[in-house]
Image 1 (tube, rainbow, N blue to C red):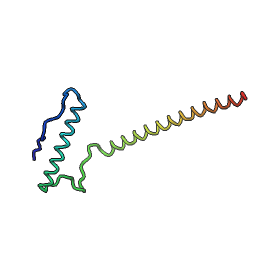
Image 2 (cartoon, one colour):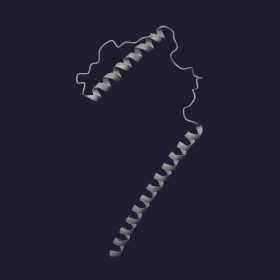
Image 3 (cartoon, helix red, strand yellow):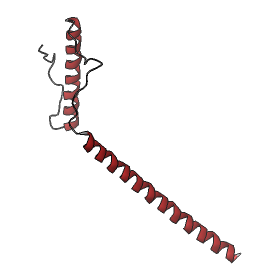
Image 4 (cartoon, rainbow, N blue to C red):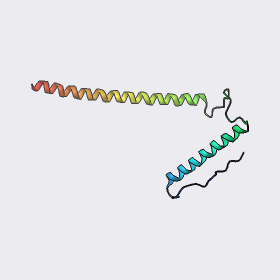
Length: 103
């Protein structure tokens, strides 16, 4: 099954990276939609079966280490936020105490 774009890229400025990238994306998307419709017309399955399982690239042990590291980083950030909030509360309490002593 060969898919050829129906029209040339409509990119006026070849030095505009964003416009060029968008033109590539739109052309690829149109080609994928066309190919999918052709496959449907030929009654060719193009989706994976529901019970399809592929082998993972990374092992479960590696993914567990990644998850542990993410949880550690999250706990570290929460502890930092708590310390920051506590410090702010102490400053506010100190200012409140000084203002009450002045009265």
